[in-house]
Length: 130
Image 1 (cartoon, rainbow, N blue to C red):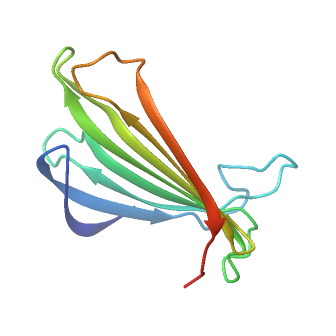
Image 2 (image 1 turned 45 degrees about the vertical axis):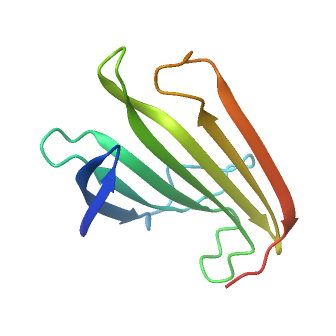
């Protein structure tokens, strides 16, 4: 992990740290046992170490250069006053395979609402690689 600078999440200031997996075998494996390299960033509360935001990318084809197949999962956290703790409040997943992508969102309706009530949306279409 390497400190990258400042960030914010869950309505507070944080410290951003990043890491890129280089060693093989990787921690994440695909269904056939192949390596799935991961790179990501965490936004952490500097005094408590609480996770304020996570942003992780998965290299699904393992090529690192071509990136024909990849996934990104971004999770935002917010305080749940019922338990005085940070909980996931929004998750955005993006997948791309050979130029065609899909994005899905999962969002808690309210930090004070039922913990099991989540709004989910998805979108599929052509994506342009940058």
